[in-house]
Image (tube, rainbow, N blue to C red; front, side, top):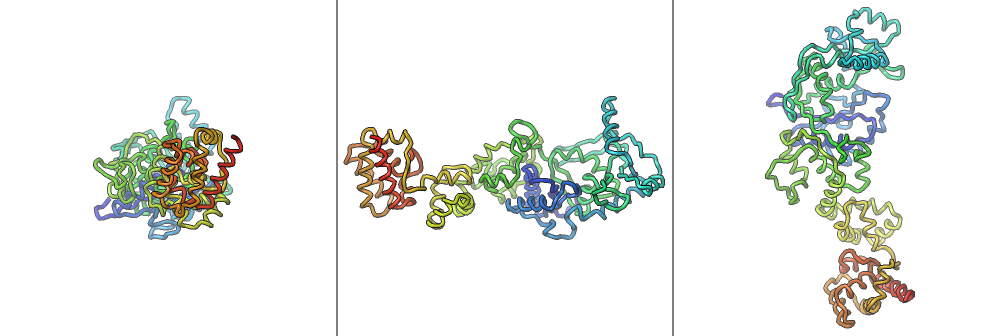
Length: 509
């Protein structure tokens, strides 16, 4: 890369399904790298698989990216100088370079069917040989091949694999040598089916390695940051770069992401869609922070503002992110650890933001929706402020705040038994009497004084005093500070609840 050339990186998903977690990590690594070096991030849609790629899937992936708050600089909806940004709109470019390789005898037509190739592969493996293409079509002339195509046969194109070693200097893995003879002549376009549009008559459908190299080169990418699983593609791509005389970008192959079972990440062990995690109540900040630490670690001596070495803002990560911190060893996607991190963000993020993101989870419940609407925004913010330290996920907040719902309480057996022993019922009745004259439920010091007066009057203290009061107000034997709960309930609800508790205790005494 020239010294004056600005960093250009890309994220190039195939719209064949949801945006999975491994893809989000690749996107985030590229975004951080671009921002660290003042470069640009390009979003390219690799949709040459016309049977599986759909506009619906593309829309879904784009929505996931936007919901994470990740801004790219060029893409299908952000035109730049190197578009179009969908591979399905770039077939003429692939055809151009495929013809160039044909004209230079660096590629040839291959009429072998997929079934025949499979048979050849299996036969080679049974004989203990490297399962590479045996060159069946390598020696036929171009003229003969064109006659067959004119007669109605269809063909793909194979590139002639040079007999030489290829060396890659990878920023993460160091020097990697791809030895001669390990890769045979390989397809750069495949035979199109009757349902598929050809790139150009007689050329066929471009395969991943071919279209990827052409796009990366023409879009002037300087760095290719991607998962280790793409390392197997690199040898073929190096050959294509060389054959087309394209400048080689700098490669960085990041660590694989495994589940806690040490197996490849899948739906079973955590690799579900970004939307599913957001719908479960994870913050986008949590997802990105957690994923950034899967295969990368910040330099020593960094002290994030959060006070925890693993909880960093994007701005903090940008300052220190680089390939030198990337690891070779597989990273483990631990959902429980991500949930812990989300609870950290639940407490750390501004209350206004947590309240805003919590609202949709309350509005899904018709009962909560009505209550929130009636009580207003200020009341709702206080609710979130009270319960956010009790939960890990936004989706858990409505259940945690359930103790605020209802004017009457139904006690469980343990609570009833507690109130029936000693002076439990007397404490509740004294509470009802004194709260009749307690004017300001938000007066926490006044409420604590009221409790002391009840204790002195009845000769009770500790659990015998505070537990009956908690049960009478919330129906639970544990929970947040009562002085915070009282003003959220309101005077009429408080009195109604206490009366319902007294009725239950007396009814079973």
